[in-house]
Amino acid sequence: MASLVDTNILVYRFDPLAPEKQRRAKALIAAGIADRSLCIAHQSILEFVAAVTRPRKVLDGRALLTQTEALLEAELLCLQLSVLYPSREVLSTAMRGATMYGLPWFDAQIWATAEVHGLDELLSEDFAHGRHYGSVRAVNPFLAATGVHELPALYAAT
Image (cartoon, rainbow, N blue to C red):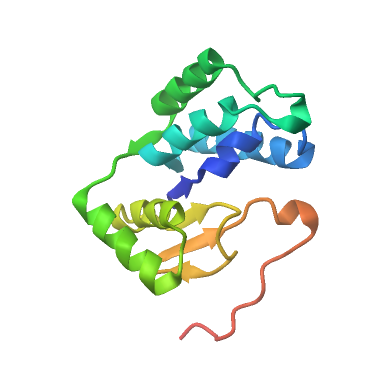
């Protein structure tokens, strides 16, 4: 099963303010690289660099990474994960997703990338855990660490 990893998971790998999420994000990315089960959207690379280089008040105005560190990490991600690029179909699917599911525009773009490329899961904390958006199931990989578990199926398989 192939999954698309959202930007927030990439950023948590470098966030010392959320140590449990940091540990989980590092393990998730390492496992996905090892078994080649993760893909990344072009958009997530752009968002990652912007997010980790932005100064943060809680870090006394420092960023999580310097520009050079962020770009090197982005390049490594591009070498280690399959990068999915936007297309006209992704754009039009995102427009429909923003309308049908009420998704914010950038989230609709990420979901549409997974939908158009036929991925089974979208790993993110920005979507309703367990919900299907089209054919893509949203999974929040941080919930297991907080004791939240999957609900049983409502209907028996036929």
